[in-house]
Length: 470
Image (cartoon, rainbow, N blue to C red):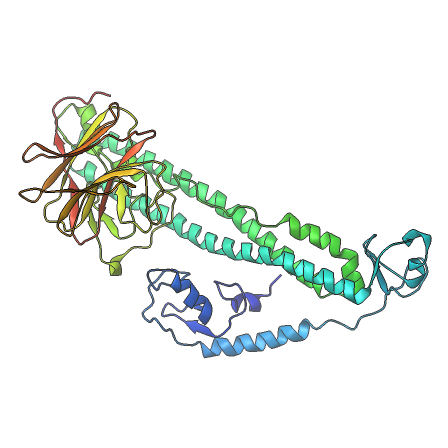
């Protein structure tokens, strides 16, 4: 096991003793090359541990820590020097063990070599065999070290996700309380019921995260113990090493990497379930007129540069300086500034209107459930989009269809007919059709919203007086 001194002098990224350490303004230190490589894969220069943004792109060297690490490395080097080897004798002939039988996989003496037990067997000198198998075991350890490093990074992200769930729960609870604050005293019972549901989900999902983090920590500890125990055997005397190497190999191979752990879909709080269409659902019990929005945005799908309103009815683009570090849950868009509606459709007809106004670049449409959310998206969505002053109808991999209008559009109505496999866009101000798709939907589709400038898209509410038929 690593000593406290080694742990205190270990880089959180590579898990090795610091090499040329630098210190960030948040007081966390890292190897200079490790930090440079980490930042090369990130859009913002934030601390890999606390995610606080660094005030400098070239952080200063931590000279005190550098001196401490060099002294520790010198001490460890002296400890790792192999002790003077003592010769082990053959238990049967009391002769020196000078050879290694490749057939029986065991050290033997010269008398053993000439015995009938080892007739026609192949032998190697002890030192050559020991070096060969040491190299094999060292190579077998590399995947375990890489796996431990990946698990360490995953655990950091999962710890942050667990914290984010708690923040989500508190923020959602505040939204619920504010909404209920607008109502009368007799609505308190409904308020309590919804907060209890939120807290139960938050507790369940927090417990789920803890249940996943605990076995991950245990597996990381097991990997660390195996690595250190095997490395200790590698430093042992040749004969002792060869006598135990099969057990070492078996122990290492049993822990070889399989599949890295991942968060399952639905890890985060289902915010839309608790606050989406809240007034409408309460009205359904109160039998009064309320404002109803046909599409509620799902914050768990929103890319980091998009900011959703508390009521989940509008979205705006934020400057990169204000981007929030969000969990990398499977539902979230990465590399594409988009957000989905919280509810998907497999049947029926559905309509929603979006206020466009003076946005410079926007995308509206629908996306299939299985369409990837990371990187460039080349299939599985149908949209109307506006960029560089040009309107286009687009459904990859088909070529864009350019559209023209006398006046700029201020609002867009999206009408989805899943039964007839029809998606249409129209201008509600002039009641004219813009374009129509006839896609062969084969799975659930979700409303899609995207933008790339500092403006806002807002879903218009509907004033209704009749109960919605399911």
